[in-house]
Image (tube, rainbow, N blue to C red):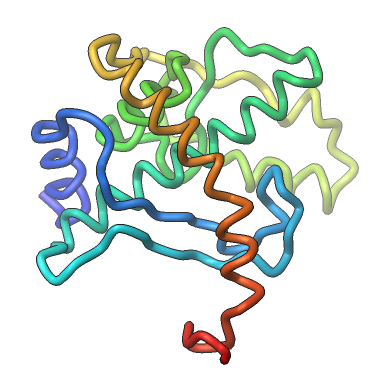
Length: 183
C-alpha cells in the first residue's frame, strides 16, 4: 500500500471530526470563489508537535472546504447538484472521496474505471469534437455517502473556515516572498 493510501486510511479511521490545524490551499487564488490571484497556501494552528499525518489531514480538509465554497457559489446560481461524479485525480480514492462527500454533504459516484476529465476537455479544445460526444457520463459502480455522524461538525468548521478568508487576504498583503513578514 502506498504512503498516500496509508495516510488517507489513517485519516479516515482515526478522524473524529474537524482538525484544529487549517490549510488554505489557494495555490492559484483566481481558481477559488474569491478571484484573488495573489492568494497563496497557508497553514494555521501548527505547533512543534504537528506531525506529517496532521498536515495531510489538514490538507484534505482544506481542499474539501474550498470545494464547499465553490459548491455554495454554484448553488447561488440556482444550480444544486444532488450527486457528484468523481473524475480525475481523486476519483479512485475512497479515502479522499469520503471526507469530501461529508464536507459537501453530497454523495459521490465512483466511475468503474478512472475517467480523464481534464483530458476530455483538452480533446474538445484542440479538435473539432463535439463536447456532448466526448463529455459523456461515465459508468459508475459505487457511491460514497457522506458520514451523517460527522456532518454537523464539518458544516460548522467549514462556516468558520470561510470567515477566515478576509484575515488571510490581509495577512497576504503583509507577507513578502519566503513567507517572512514585512515591517
